[in-house]
Image (tube, rainbow, N blue to C red):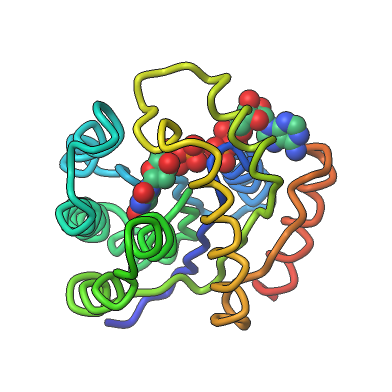
Length: 208
Ligand code: ADP
Ligand code: TYD
């Protein structure tokens, strides 16, 4: 399927600043005259937002790793069909807060090695990788305490503790080496404006 748009994703551990930077990038690109869709996962479409509550709330052990992969993939498929692909076909820049790389990490690495299963399902059901991924790298303790400070019901993954975040951070860095042309690592241990400038300069360069 050909698409006229451009697909950007933000990745990183919980509390690394993805949502903050995705929103700032969407605003800045909008001011520069681009047509932007800002969206997020899990969620971003009506059906996927319903699945979001199932995967982010409740007991950390409520789903097996395999069931969780299916739920996140189902949510992503609905999000693709109803939001991301229509926007890309209209020529919009889509900015998505988390995407399949999060499943490669959180479901693929955290409870045994299920990365192969995630990749197979992604290839079968999603069939689209981002054009550009910005990985915000962050100290796991800082990220975890920022995420816990939000105090809402969506704490299932934060309740796995800081060791999950350490594991995810290492995994994301290795993933950036594996997909070195698509994934760019940004140091998130800086103030919001400094990170924003780095993000915008990078995106400007790639969009040229
Ligand atoms: P994520 O989407 O990665 O979980 P958020 O963007 O929601 O992260 O940020 C988590 C918290 O940290 C928010 O309260 C946000 O205001 C704050 N924050 C984000 N970026 C920075 C930064 N560079 N320095 C300090 N605080 C930040
Ligand atoms: P998110 O709302 O982006 O959380 P945060 O702002 O703390 O980064 O995502 C919620 C949780 O969902 C997060 O802990 C990571 C997890 N997640 C997965 O486990 N797999 C996935 O495919 C996605 C998209 C998210």
